[in-house]
Length: 158
Image (cartoon, rainbow, N blue to C red; front, side, top):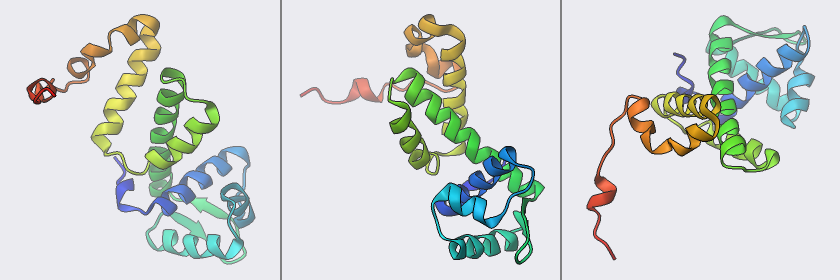
């Protein structure tokens, strides 16, 4: 599994933007990335230099931008986290699409791989089971392979 937590939030955003841009069009230019992220061209060039140094993108001056296999794997991991968080916030918590999108962009950078894996399992379970899945949320820790803790029950009652 890619180690996106070792990348800055900004680097993760650039990789995700490159992946999405490459799905929208056959070639990706610096201006496509700048437009998608709402940043200036020099900012894109500076980030691409850093990502290229890490072996995540291929970019030649004034040329097209391309994710390497490692870069594509990192970008897919970021996008998968984003989509899972969005689906949970929007589909199960009822957060508006706009708010869920903003929140998913913020949250996707800080979750551990274990938390993301469990969230994906939860979202999949809820989508598969519909209302019955929502009613069965209390049993999720067992289904996800985790353990229930009784820490909440041991707290002093006020």
